[in-house]
Image 1 (cartoon, rainbow, N blue to C red):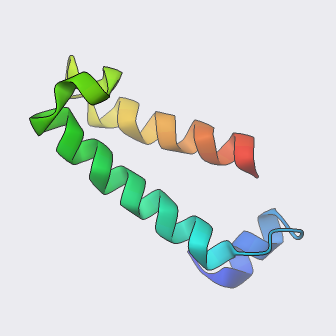
Image 2 (cartoon, rainbow, N blue to C red):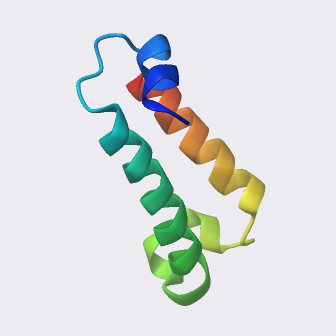
Length: 64
C-alpha cells in the first residue's frame, strides 16, 4: 500500500504512512496475542486468521 493509494481512498488523511504502519503492527500484535496471550483477544478461541483479517478490514473501513 502506498501513500498515493491511501490518499486516493481518504483524501483528507494526514498520516497515511502511519496508518499503514499501524495496521501492519496490529496484525503482528494480534497474531502474537492469539497464540501467547489469549485473554487479550477474542480471536484466540479458534486462532482464525481469516477473522483477524476481517477485523482489520472492518477497522480500516470504519476509519477511512
